[in-house]
Every structure is written in structure tokens, then in C-alpha cells.
Image 1 (cartoon, one colour):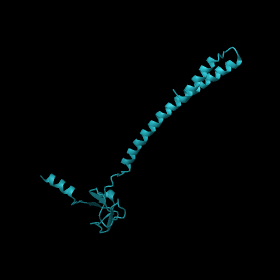
Image 2 (cartoon, helix red, strand yellow):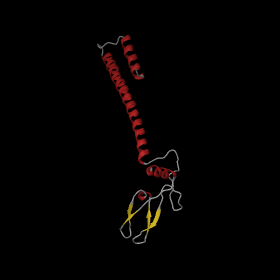
Image 3 (cartoon, one colour):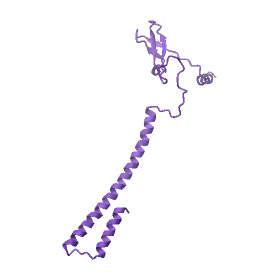
Image 4 (tube, helix red, strand yellow):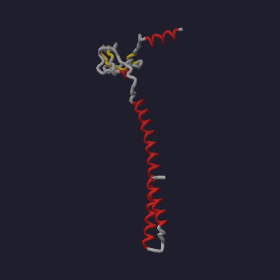
Length: 150
């Protein structure tokens, strides 16, 4: 029971103890005011309960949004630097550029991270397809190659 309901209950008891009757105009008015106050107290309690439920839902939505942001923006909280490139050509720590010459037109081609996983690229100069064979000499890839050769 809320504070407002307690106060309205006290007023109802006080009015009954004072024997305020509906026979006088003042009695009718006081009982009507107490009835309205009771309705207001009930509504305020309902609103407070709904507000608590909404607050819990907003907290859940906030947690879900945080998880989605973590997945969408690939937030890395453990500060691992394993995925950083060691080449001298990287301008940004998280972006690696590779360069090579097109075998068809001999123009230099710059590749960003997005193209590093593809098996072929299109030369922006001569528009011919270039097959790329990526090789890696890291320990993880070397172990994987050993397993596949058996």
C-alpha cells in the first residue's frame, strides 16, 4: 500500500469517526473529495507500477542493444593486438594495405583489408581478373596445414 493510499484511508476513517453524513451539503462535498482522492491514489499506484515495468524493459533493451552494438561494431574489450598488421605500410592500426603489380598491365594495385580474404581481384586499371594465392607463415596456419596433409 502506497503512502497516498494510507493517507486517503486515514481521511476516510477520520470522516467516519467524525460522523460526517451525506445529509448535509458539506458532508456530501467532503465524501466526494475523499472518493476522488482515493481514485487518484489508485491511479498513481498503477502509474508507478507501470513505470517500474517500463524501466525494467528499458534496462533489458539497453543490455540487448549493448550486445548488438558489440557484435555490429566488433568491439574488442580484451585489448588483444593479435590482429594488427606488422607491415610498415599500415596507416591506421586496424587497416592493412597490401600492394602488388598487376601481371597484365604492370600497374600497382593497393588492397585494403576487405580484399585480403578473396581469391581474386579485378585490376582497376586494365579490368582483368587477377588470381591471388595467399600464404601465411604464422603458427596457427602452419598447424592447420600440417593437419590437412595427413
